[in-house]
Every structure is written in C-alpha cells, then in structure tokens.
Image 1 (cartoon, rainbow, N blue to C red):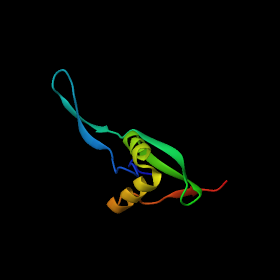
Image 2 (cartoon, rainbow, N blue to C red):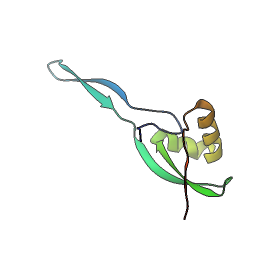
Image 3 (tube, one colour):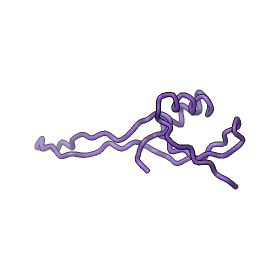
Length: 85
C-alpha cells in the first residue's frame, strides 16, 4: 500500500538533507499515517482507512460521512476495506 492519506491525499515529498558543510543529499519527508478502523453509521459497517493526522482531525471536525464524500469527489478515496466480524 502506498503512503497516501485516503482523506486528504497527502503523500511523501522529497527534499534535501543539508549538512553543516552545506552538502546536499536527497531525503524523503513521509506523511504521519495511521491505519484506523471507523464505524460508518450510514452503511452500518466497520471500515479500515489509511489516514494522516490531518485526516483524523478532518474526520473529527466534519464527520466520517462528509469526509468520505469530499475525499471521493477529489479522487483521494480509491478503495474502502470493510471489516466483517
């Protein structure tokens, strides 16, 4: 699975490590990602999402259904895994 948030679309970017002698080497700035289970009330099921810390705050602010709808419109939401217990 790639390191992309399914709610905000954030992904890793590249940059440089700069040493004291101003020597530049390539590095990656990864996203703070979590695999979290959410209960989707509208569908009456548990889903598994890969979300960033900013994505968790978005879900807390807007609600899960609105955040999923917005992510789907922007094309960030590729696949939702449902969990069966």
